Image (tube, rainbow, N blue to C red):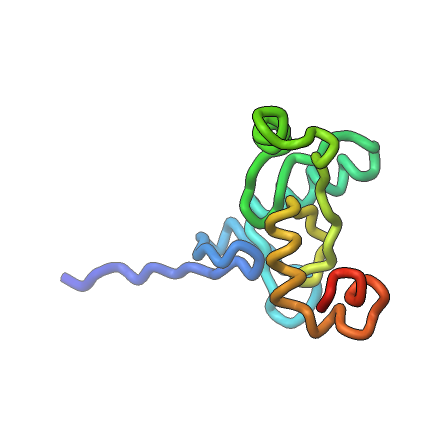
Length: 121
């Protein structure tokens, strides 16, 4: 007896292989997004539009509530910030840690800009 063929598609945003019924195309060119990433994206964009609290960091998935608790436990609550970053073809809200890591990886995009000069890239 042969093993069944399992078909899966990799989400271009979280890199997790998903059932083809759980992803949908973004634009043209074969880029797909899973339902989970779309849910995070939509929730964060809605929060921006309504001037409310975001769901959390798109990269590490830490929620806004978890981030607030971490900062209140020891850090300065005034540092509770999310950063809007155009990443992977969509706008993503990232926590400071993930935003800084992304900026280091993509220094080529920031080099030569005033922001890049301020950040030292």
